[in-house]
Amino acid sequence: MKAFVKQAIQILEQNGYKITNPRKQVLELIQKASSPLSPYDLQKMLSKEEALNPVTIYRVLELFVKLHLVHKVARGGFVKCSIPTEEGCHHFVVCNSCGTTKEFAEDQGCHFHLPTNIAKDFTVTSHTYEIAGICKKCKK
Ligand SMILES: [Zn+2]
Ligand SMILES: [Zn+2]
Ligand SMILES: [Zn+2]
Image 1 (tube, helix red, strand yellow):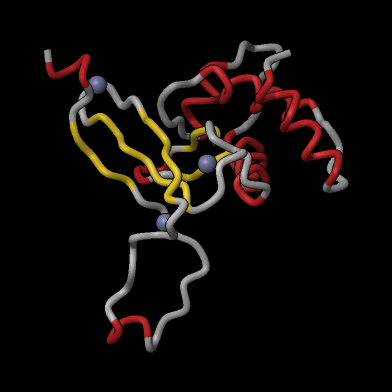
Image 2 (cartoon, helix red, strand yellow; image 1 turned 45 degrees about the vertical axis):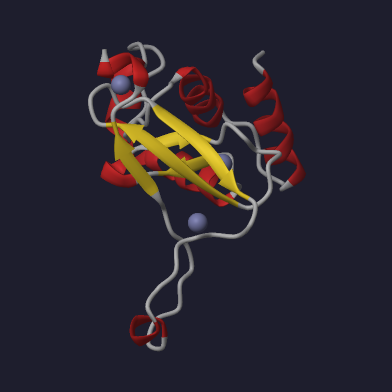
């Protein structure tokens, strides 16, 4: 079993969640992916015998997001947290061409701040932060 799946199972158990088949299936798939996947992408990767419906997949993903195992990124995709031991805010750079995602932590605190006129009427509960561009491979 890959380290990510092993660790995720541990975290699920520590938080009192059962290791159901859908949860295990989604973990296995998302651990292999290098770019963000939507519930529909994940569904397509499953064989007939393993079939899950997108609603089930979405619920599993939402739980993983809550437990910080997975991040939700822009465009409806989900990607595993690749730096779970790093403190601070986790952000991403995403290649516009191939979709490859690289995660980094901002340990000095998030650089993302709301202007005061917005912040006075709005309480932030979560955020995603992606920087789009072109990766080294695609630039060639
Ligand atoms: Zn992360
Ligand atoms: Zn690329
Ligand atoms: Zn942040």
